[in-house]
Image 1 (cartoon, rainbow, N blue to C red):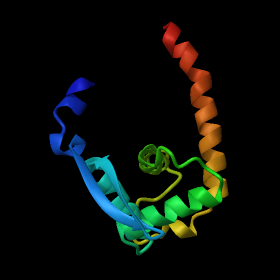
Image 2: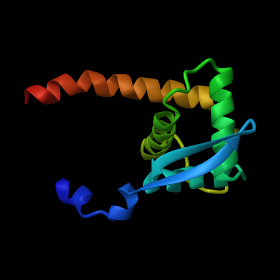
Image 3: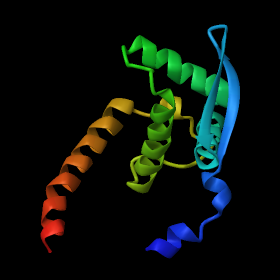
Image 4: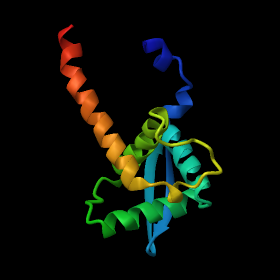
Length: 128
């Protein structure tokens, strides 16, 4: 297991800082290159730049009443959930399919059920 992760391209976990403007305020976000790559893919699917996608996520988070105090963690989780939904077969990775057109409520429901099933299995795995 470790070789799979240890021998991966180390550039993926190097950090990169990007500056952007959100509602007229200049801010910078520091993420690992791996996450910038995923954000690039997410943005491409909806015909946006990474800065546009990040701004949209930020503003929609505010509208939903979320605490944006740790926004970089939110972005990492967004990227991880995107890949998890793809791995579980709930979402296509076809770049020409916009994410804005997916049935988010259905995907979130499926994700919740799957996570609940996984959590129910975990205690049994720990005992064996």
